[in-house]
Length: 485
Ligand SMILES: [Zn+2]
Image (tube, rainbow, N blue to C red; front, side, top):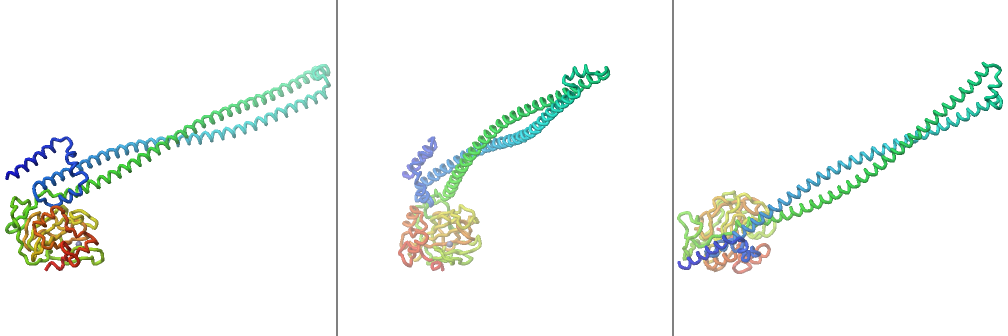
């Protein structure tokens, strides 16, 4: 009694420390961090005493803290991803604007180039017209010269005087002077007009050249703007790819953390904080018991003389040691409808029992449960003809689960029911029998508490075939089909 009280006080002290500390993880860290595998293994089964069970409870809470930390880290990563996504949206909007601007600039450049071409054509036309006018002026000058010479021939060398003085009469004189005047005036007018036209065309040509230069200069500026915009676009594109890279990295990190977290959550289900003590079978039902309460001295005595087939229905779908289609199979599979009773093959006690998973969550490659892939499972200790056996039942249903660590069962009492949990391709119960030789029940219980090994050192996979009872001493693997009668 006195001893128990001290343990209780120590336990409370530890609890107080854990609560008052600002950094609870620190307290756990030295003890559990980096040794999770060890503690998971140790705490996958009910413990030998309350101190050990308390440690497992502490480990469970440490593990939950790790999971919580991961969760909050995942949350902050999600925030970071959201920020990056915002940034990306902004950059993409910016890029859209720049692309629109480039399109507009391109359009302007195209229009300006068209204008320049039009001006060039216009200038060619003007040049042509100038040449024509010059030709006209030359022609007209030649014509005037010609006429003047003719006049001179007609009127003598000193044209005007000759005309005036040589007039035969006044009327003739007026006619001659008048004609002369008309000729020079109209010619002069015509030449003046042509010269004016030419000047006008020269002016127009200058104007066009000036316009062309102006447009060309403007276009150069636009082209420079376009190059600048393309440079910015390139920069934004680069930024976008940096963001994409960051997003991918964060997502990858997040995925790996989520995997860690879900594996921790799966493992937490398997942490057992109860104390395993053999309990007297309760009447009439057998093993409905949860926690044993203080009956330390109870040593079960098992009376059955042989084992009966535990699955009460269905049929054998795969035997030991190989699957029908090949591949090592270390147990006996009984395919039966979900809910088919699985009973104690002989008198015995439950070493491990877990129905944490849904009855129908099974699929090939689903590694939940303990051992991995077992889904809901039971490990059962029994004695027949002075030999101790440990028997595993895998893939059980969540419902109608009667077994709990430490509970005793008489032969034929219902332990659980067939389910489809863990690594399965359909509803069935997988059973394995380990022969422990003459190992005492107390030794077997304490050994299982320290190893949590459903294989009892015989291993799994191909290597386990060298530990069958036909080639090896105990602990060794029996063919269940030869054990159940
Ligand atoms: Zn199987």
